[in-house]
Length: 332
Ligand code: SF4
Ligand code: SF4
Image 1: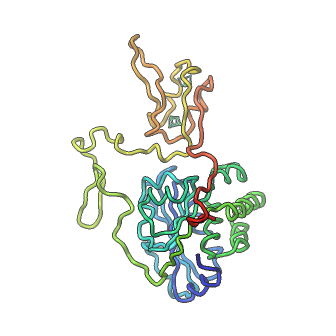
Image 2 (image 1 turned 90 degrees about the vertical axis):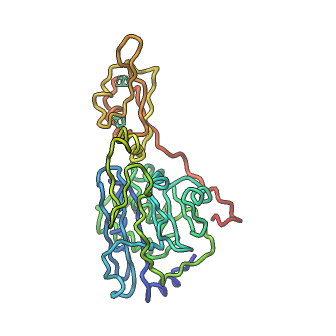
């Protein structure tokens, strides 16, 4: 891992590129804005908005340098040196390591250990840092908003700015108690980040534009055309439409149905905006509540709020913190 002095040296003649992967509503764009505001030199950031709605995958990009002339580009970052993933469910859905050079850093909000992450992303040549930002957010902020907390992990491995510089940027953007809580959460994140340093350094002089590859092609409905890719719906290819797309990964909560408590009133079925309440036809020829379709449920919690007998509950999709990499394999 480079020291703060070495990073300063790199920034004099190079650009350091960052990419943030989040879900709509998690504040990935705010995180990238804060990087530019906290950085002492020159910086630009751009968001990439696709199907922007709560829970859908989003990206945002940051370029930082001490040399003003090097950060004028407004195109997306193709070769990020640091990638931050605010939602662990994105690991299986988006190619989050696309374009990271050898020795680059992948920073993930997760309780998975770093070796498991290497297996999931299929890269053994990058460094990995993990932080249980979700639990810190719930504990300190009282809400599952992890965008500032992931920046604590970024500070720990990148030294691009100091905690004081980030705190100043936060106080300019947020007010009073909210700013204070975010700064407290960031400080905890710097302490708690698990670092898996491969000992390989990045060649910051390389900023390679790689082919467009964020969405993994090969799913039914994906077609290559001359200049891009398109999604299409053909009943011979996608017989049941959304049966192919796991929108259930867009939600942070697992929704749990208790058949013992359920009185079969069907209120949850009427209110669910995603048709994610399962019902089956019984021998009495009537439809009965049968469970939750977690493949499509986006955890809006409408069903929890409306159920008159508390037969539906929720639990976070990940458990308590862990830092499972042994010290002799690079864990800290
Ligand atoms: S939380 Fe309940 S209402 Fe909301 S999408 Fe899931 S099953 Fe439907
Ligand atoms: S609202 Fe509650 S009681 Fe009514 S069907 Fe749904 S889970 Fe069962």
